[in-house]
Image (tube, rainbow, N blue to C red):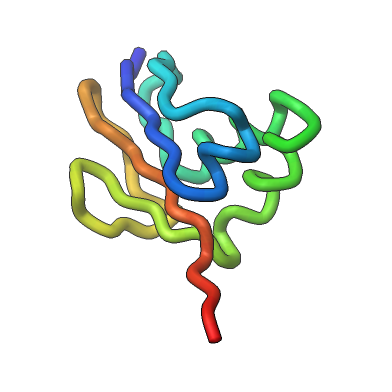
Length: 86
């Protein structure tokens, strides 16, 4: 098992009413597996994480990573919503 900490920022934190989670995933899990797991929580979670690989910035241990990144025990994964402005 891989135990990780997941943190949410900005609009993610507000929409999910959650700032962080501690989760255990199977060995060899990737960021995609994590997104799939979170999307299965339903409602807002599904809306945000079923499309995560398209427009969400993801960091692992404070380094930007791709959706294929393989998670390690003790990792901290952060999700950042797309930046908009004008």
